[in-house]
Image (cartoon, rainbow, N blue to C red; front, top):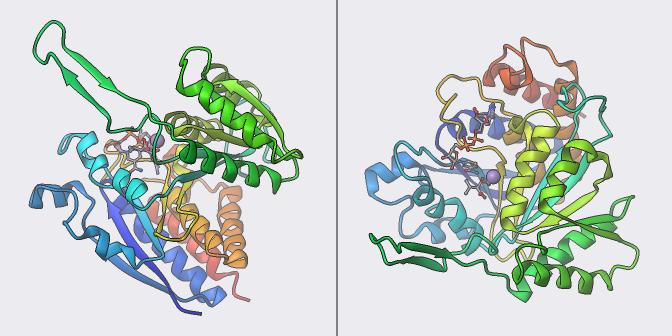
Length: 361
Ligand code: NAD
Ligand code: IPM
Ligand code: MN
């Protein structure tokens, strides 16, 4: 088998701190499970790069990354240095759109040893996937300002839903639901208030449902859906939502299961025409950057999703079990402050790396 080519882009803030442990854990898995991984690091897509070059990425970024199978991505954003919409539209959002990574897959799972902020929940009670549309919807570049500088100043940003764009994310979500024991798909909508795009979304869901008769489908308006996340998270299996709804739900889900510091994310181009991108859900966390106390699990788990995506099932299962083993020990000297511990990125990351190496067959 030819090696998997992985571009490593650490980005900003804690992205740079958690990335080394992500790479070490992938290397440990590669060693134990005999997988060929080839890493290449890039310094662009960071605010430091922007300050030096006046842009987030070099002009030929696409050529530099196109031959990769995957991009392993930390986090971007230093709002005191570069406005967020500039740094993100100049990097991550470009990757998602230009590499047509139209699926953003994010788990919300209550893991052993992680204290759940919701009362009375135990591992197994909360276990669902969020399938987020990742290239269109509310994240659109269509719009602008008129009457600038006057009392009538007006800004408009259009939501864009294409039939192709909606149907392909729905298809993915239905197939994922179909592959799971509960075969249950929930659609996030807001068709009571957003009266053109959201009723259209609902219609496409109803249409797609006809092809998946064994999947039980329901829908909730996004407002009450967020309430159910907190009060009845056990009812969910797979949730599909537009770009913005999926974004919000995928911070809320992990927060309901303990900490966003452990949540991973796969930005998938299912056709394989372009590299897919694997990253933690969290951002660059400027408030804790430089202190060495960032939770590295989101980054490491994103590496696990990478292995799974490329069919390395056994290795992926191994890495997940290593993460679970370290989490379930909930050793306060090892785990980080977001989980109530006194540990560091290093103590946490090394514990998981060691656990993976212990899987030695
Ligand atoms: P954030 O996820 O960076 O941080 C939110 C809060 O969670 C902070 O208090 C932070 O300390 C904490 N936190 C996040 N990750 C953690 C971890 N691994 N361990 C421990 N604590 C953790 O979100 P934000 O504050 O909204 O954004 C900060 C910057 O990151 C902004 O520039 C934003 O645009 C950017 N951002 C980037 C991405 C990305 O690159 N994928 C995602 C989200 C936000
Ligand atoms: C995420 C992030 C990004 C998003 C930001 C940083 C643009 O919040 O990956 O969830 O909104 O998609
Ligand atoms: Mn987000």
